[in-house]
Image (tube, rainbow, N blue to C red; front, side, top):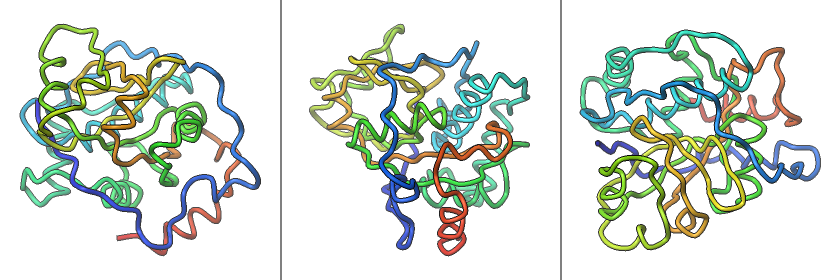
Length: 237
């Protein structure tokens, strides 16, 4: 199991998701179920620090399931090759905002990103809104040795607040794809892990809502897409 989420930041000029909504964000439902994906896949993240790339692949998979569209997704080696092309051949990890800019410009193995916006990572209703409206939240977390001990056992995996204490082993990218009143559910290392809300408060570092091409007909879920895309154009790398 490898890490690869570098410390991130929000580019100057890009506002949080709620800014692009005319009025308050709609209240999310109390529960969003885990998407029906038969196998999430490791995506090479047991050997390479490509979690940022695996995370966006899993985001596309979640959206395809929700939109009920049949699509092909890249195999492990394709994902690793995409990662190494992006990094210039180094196993150096990614800054999530920089990588999202790259994917928006270049596409991802036949899949597209129309727009993306930061989400206040500890604002749970906004995070839940992203999961419900866009299929997931693309997030960065810090993983401790206790959290790693949990995922080295057989699933199901559950991370609690106690697991977030102690030494941090690295930064990791995971998409949050579901939630209920007790847990957030995220995809990591080929499995779904349940994360308690107190644990999320301690481990999370950033979150992004992504509008993917899996949602057809330009459905922006109520945000001012033109304004968001204009800001993204200003901060494109």
